Image (cartoon, rainbow, N blue to C red; front, side):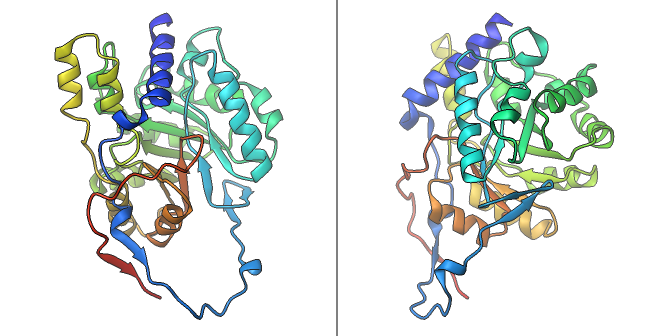
Length: 313
């Protein structure tokens, strides 16, 4: 458990201090532009951004996406994020609750978080490897109960796990475990990637087992392969990880493909969402919500290609 906690601290250090080095791909949103309308015929003050989510009402279609868990400073980070979500009326997903479930260190992932943010849509979070373990259903129930969550996120990160020392390497039975969790939990289940994107084939299998919502979590934000490269113990391990630094389905492509294939499936667009313009593009491409992990959506990556597609009314 000590090694796992150190891993979480390493991840925080790298993401906070090495951001330019762990963003290796464009999101695809830079290829899209809105056609300007000089006669909008609407009142800006009457625009209503509210959206329902799991029995709650969000003041805007935004999710503070799962950031961190399992390290002592995660308590402060998650508390501040919960306070912000409560003040702004947004949804929030916590970081992985694995350490909190497997040790005496909950790092603030308790009902205290719900007390800070009593009105928000709050999402618990576990990795697919934990869901597929013999304790999977127990972990899932406890993760939801410990923060009084409105839903459970199950995150898929096979690439990251393959590249990190001590990572989970056996991914057999994960889909069946997700189905069991969907059928057993009293709250909806959301499935997300962590930055390499969900393909249509994977999304369809998840929809078939009853997953309530999908987070495309595509390439274009933080590359967790590059993060593992930054913390690699040897040059060989670093080289292997960095070979996958630009791996994945760009966020906009994943969103378009999934919305076309599964038009009734609620989708979260995340993975490099930089600002409100990206959020608007994501909503126009079929997302229900847009999610981001960074403390601010200010730093926008330089477009890799010229914009070539236009939204028209």
